[in-house]
Length: 312
Image 1 (cartoon, rainbow, N blue to C red):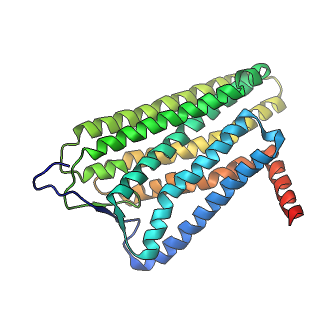
Image 2 (tube, one colour; image 1 turned 90 degrees about the vertical axis):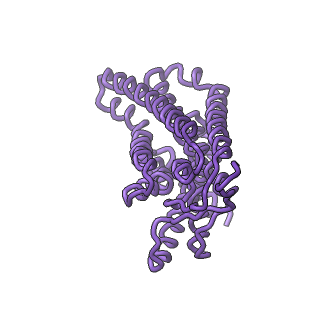
Image 3 (cartoon, helix red, strand yellow; image 1 turned 180 degrees about the horizontal axis):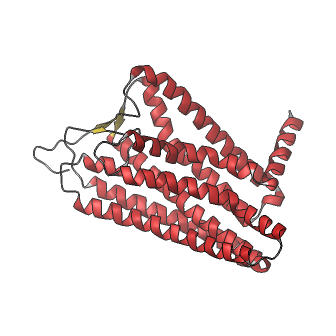
């Protein structure tokens, strides 16, 4: 931290979604319910995939990792908000804020990259079905997962180290329910030009490249599906990627809303709703989307429940 009239802060204040005291019990109950549904739903997906040999394929390998990532992603923001509401204290330590920001970027990036990898997986499965298991072999799947982790860890650590060089004044109120990098930089007293350039450049890069990969994959998928003469064949081919396409639409739709509102000094109500959609609602809906529209997943869940009832 720089010396002078700048003060080394020990904590930040998270203003949350609403300052109305009467709304706090409602918000606590609502977000606790959504968090429990998110955790239980995604855990069921992971258990069903790991316990059913029929689902030990590349597509479900990435889906299991996406479910684990969604649990961590939601836990990063919601747990602290629930604690703050319950204790009626909006404070978060400086170290805790940086830690939350770091993990948020890791798991948000992982969500993004895993959705991209899953789109590529569907492209190979539909456009090159005879070579699918050869191309998407266990070694390649492991390397893609490892590469996704390395990219997200590098980006998150780089941004966190850049924040450490920033000095803060006494005004440390964050108009959000979690420590978001763009909002933290708004509170800085020192020059944040380098931080802002890095933030928007890398965020744009990590947004544009994966989205381009997804769009390219689906353009080839649609082209391959249109070449199928049978209507039943077209339906079966498209049904294998319908759930993923819906999840991608929700993720990028909410993410775009967060990106457009994150640069404002005081996020609007629409910005708060976009953040809730991005960090809570989308991870909560993912298990339902993948299970309700997937016959293999529904069968695996039924077998999982039967085994649980048998052991009881």
